[in-house]
Length: 72
Image (tube, rainbow, N blue to C red; front, side, top):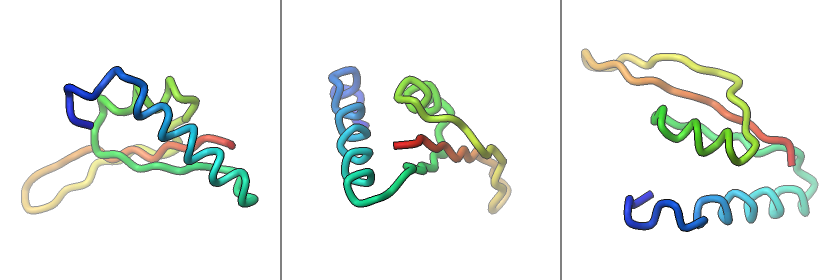
């Protein structure tokens, strides 16, 4: 998210909306993927747990990849 918009609750509201949307349609889980380690703290605060972490290498560069999930 754009830094000036961070800390205003927009991301948390989006997560809540997505959870409600999925649950109302019979879903039981939200699953997200991120390549930014700093996002993990936010997702953890929102009730997600990391279930997979790995490194991805491409064209001589390496980046982290995290998979998180939350029961709705």
